[in-house]
Image (tube, rainbow, N blue to C red; front, side, top):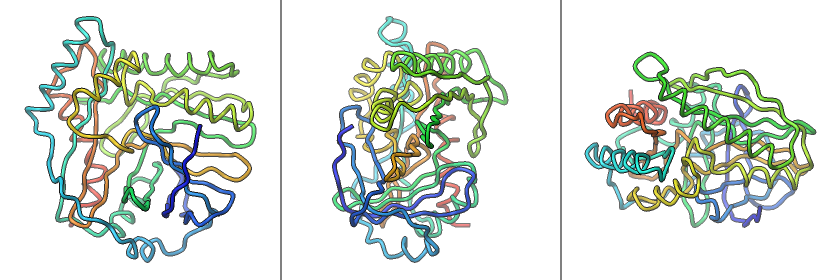
Length: 325
């Protein structure tokens, strides 16, 4: 994984934790990594020293956030057309699954400092973060999904996908989740890791619930573990299957650049431990509003209206923290 050093600041809280940490990108041996959705895209690295942050409000309030000129949103009609295009590709045997996202412009909400505080309080089991990068701007989110975490000799990754709709899991969600879990297992196996696959479970993430299968493995050293990160990303949970074909379909269908949405991000210590999460339930932050992103996993059993509704539910994570009371 080639890292491109940039300047800026990141703040975050790990799932289930109480401490807020920061890294200011002014040099040091720790890092905060930010990767885009595109597999071959530029992976950014803030270098510095991880420290505990006692006043997140003051830091966020000091950020000079830019104005966004593109205030467009994906219409329901457009999104449903994209869903129908994807299911046509599945019927033709080109795709097994595709994750199609949409963009929503929102304005009239609270300050970034207040929004971050609300995310911390509302999503205690998520990776809550905000970053401001020179030349790239600001982003904030509360991700429910681990890409890969390393602590000493222990690794953890997971398949998170299949969103409960209409109060139950259907064959569609079970089928979708199975593909993701099998893909993660295959990557671990091909990469030569000894792993254990856990029993299927569920995870609540704001207003929605997802099927979850966790995997534990032994570390093969930081360099090889970082190569595993590159092999896992993007998973079928954010792209589709086959991954390359799904990625090509996404780039030719969605009328916006995903940028860091559905990429991955998180801290890495000087000794090589890291906590990387998929960049979901997130928004680009501007002085005049937010660009909010959410997607849904499609397969041959997808109903377009259900998929639209699923993206709406997912967007509530950000919108619920942004909208003024």
